[in-house]
Each structure stands twice: as C-alpha cells, then as structure tokens.
Length: 309
Image (cartoon, rainbow, N blue to C red; front, side):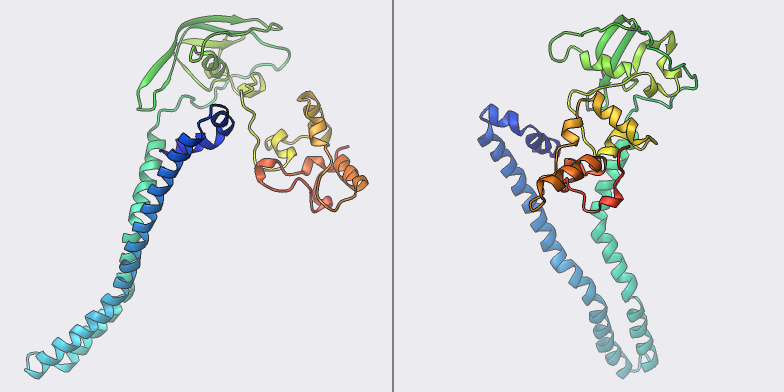
C-alpha cells in the first residue's frame, strides 16, 4: 500500500464508511504499517552495531599496533619512536573515520531523497512562464477553445490525450455547464481555461489573446475547485493569500463567499463567558487560526490580531 493510497484512505474516510469497506482498508493499512515497522526495526538493528563499530575501530587499531609494534621493536626491526608515531597517526584518524561512518549511515536516505528530487525536476511542466501581454480588467472577457487537443501525464511519463479537437466559445455574461460522465474531461477544460493545463495542439484564447501570452491571468480567470482547501494559518491569510488588502476588503470577500456567519461564530473555549466570547468573535475573527493549523480558534493575544473597520 503506497503512501498516496494511505493518504487517500484517510481523506476518503466518509466514503470508506459509507461503502462498508472499513475492514478492507484496515487490513491494507495494517499491512503497510507492519512493513514500515519491520523496516524501522532493521534500520535500528543495523545502527545498533554499526555506530559502536565505528567507535571501536580506532582503539582496536591502536591496541593492535601496540602489540605488533612491541614485538617488532623487540626484534629490532623498528624503533620505539616509529611505533609511537604509528599509534598517534591512528589516533588522528579517529575523527575522519567517524565522519566516514556518519556519511555511510546517511547515504541511503540521501539517495532516496536525491531520486525523488530528480523525479520532480525531470517531470514535464505543463505551465511555462507567464506571458507579457497585459489585458484590461474592465468587465468579463470572451474565452474560446480553438481546435484544442489537451493531454496529461499518465503517471509513467507518457502523454495521455484526454480531449481532442475541442472548439468552445464562452461569451461574457453567460453561464455554461459542461455535463458528461466521469473522465469525460470536464475538469480538464476548466484547468485549461486557467492555464493549469496546456493544449498540445490548438489554442485557448481570452478576448482573442492566447493564454500563454497573458500576464497576470489570475486577474481575469478564477478557478473554483470541487473541494475547498484551507491553508494552515489565519482567516485573513486564507483570504488574502499574501496580498495587501484592508479589513473591509477581506470582509467583503467573506460576505461574497457567504461565510461571514462561520467566521463570526463565537469561540467555544471552555471557561469564557458568553458575552466575552461574542465580543472577541465580533472584533478578532480575521486573526483566528483555521482548523488546518490544528490550533484552537480562540486567539490568545487579542492585540496581535487585526480588527475589522
């Protein structure tokens, strides 16, 4: 059971319970956990004798030199000074030998990390650098697909064609619904409209300008994913995404998303009086941590959080 499979098992907990697949997923997760446990035990056993061995090499070498050197010196083949010099040389090698042992111990992890980084670096990127043409932000634009063939990586480094010869025109002020079975390419069209997937052939244009040539496409095209993602941080950070916006603009965005009631919900920390909770909820919600940060929604330092105007 691979790591992505284990992650999906947790994220799809509701679906697993609804389909009655708890036993199967539990067995798969237990098997993966046992495999990880066995691997950790093997690593621990190897480290248990490898590191002490590195520490014993120098003392054992010095003792061996003393014994051999005493015998050779007694026979007149070497002098006592030469024996002492040899022992001192072995002592000086203690630190380099420990360093070599540490490198050898870290080598497997380094090779795995290097391979993963190499896979990411060699992966084909679907989006190049943003374009150079600036479009006016006034009003909606016309989005068009012109004979576009759109593909995606099949996971083995090969290009799998998902949509072929797509010609579609979305006029300003209109609402278009794409309906089709799973895997028909509905989400792929949305990704291509946001330049998150590039057509192999054909073009996708906004007001007649190819998306590849437009600078700041995010100012003109907004992608709403099927599943909302909340970053670990405060409410303000999730709304602004690092941008410089006033409290009023943040509140306007929250109202547009219809989540003002959720943000203004009083903190349920035990021990706070209802009136105090309501007052803190009214003045400090923008600085509350989100659930993704795994922190209590109650701010501990009221002065450190921004207040809406």
